[in-house]
Length: 362
Image 1 (cartoon, helix red, strand yellow):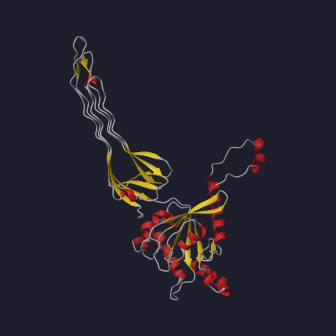
Image 2 (cartoon, rainbow, N blue to C red):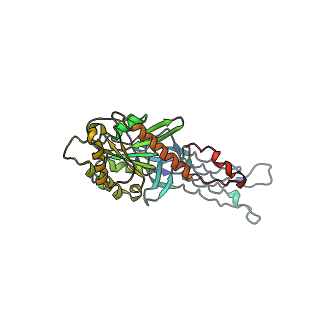
Image 3 (cartoon, one colour):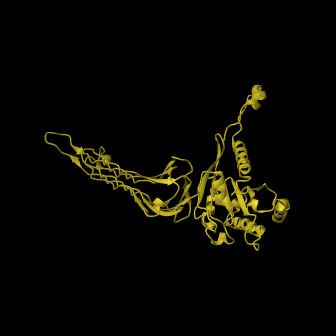
C-alpha cells in the first residue's frame, strides 16, 4: 500500500429541510388549523481515530465527502427526517487543518476519539410554529439552514516514543529491525527507506515502547532537499531522538563529524522545538572499527561534536550494544512517565508507608 501522510478534502454537511405550510381540513372536523411540520436537520460529518489505519491513502482518491440533506416538513404535524451522518475514519495522530486559513482545528490523538468536523444545518420551521391567538392561519415558513462546508488539509504525525534520525545508510532501518518487530526494506544503497516505519520494542513483560524510523536526511533537508524533510513532522511528537551516525563509512573522504553536525543544523532550521528535544548519540557500525583504536576514536568524535549527552556504541548488524540501548531508552521513558504523574496528597499519618507503594507501570 502506498504511504500517504498528507491529503486535501472537502467536507459538506447536509442542508436542513424546509418547513411546510399546511392546514388541517377534514370533513366533519370543526377545529382545523395550521399543521405544517418542521424540516429535518442535515447530516453531520464526523471524524473518528481508527487505530487500525496508518496512512491517509483513502483520502488521496476520494476528496469530496457530503452528508445527506434533511427532508422537508410535511402536513399533519409531521417533521422531516434528519439526513444521514457520515463518519470518516482517520489514523491516530492525524491533524485536521483549515486549508484556507492554516488554523489547526483538531488533532486525533486518542484511539476511538470521535469529533464533528462539519455540522449539518437545522431544519426550517413549519407554519404550526407561527400559530398564535392573533394569527390563527399563519402562512409563514422558514427554509432550512445550510450545512457547514470546509476545505480541510489532513496531515499524519505518527505517534512514537522514540525517533531515529541520521544520514542515509546510517543503519536506522537495520537498528529498528534488530530491536523491534518492524521489517523495513534494507539495502546497501541510500534512500531505501521511503516512508516512516514504526516498530514496537519489547524490553520485558509489559515493558515496551514505540520507535519510528524516517527516511534519511541530507544537508539542505530543511529547504526541501532529499526525502527526509517530508517526514520530519513525524518526529515532533516523539519524546526522545536517537541521532544515528555511520561511524565507519566506506568512503574515506566522508567525515562522520561533519555529517552529524549537518543533521543537527537541519533540525534547528526546520523546528526549534524539535532541535531542543532530548537527543542521544548512537555510533553505529562500531564492529568495523579496530578494537584497539575504538576508544580513542569515540573520544575524538565526541570532542569534535562538543556533545555532552549519552553516547552509545552499537552494531545494528551484529546486535552488539542494541540490548543495552533498548533498556536505557525504556528506563529513560519510564522515568519521564513517572515525573509527569500528578502528585497525590498523602495523609501525614501514612507518610511513612508511601515508599512501600509500588510505582505505577508505564
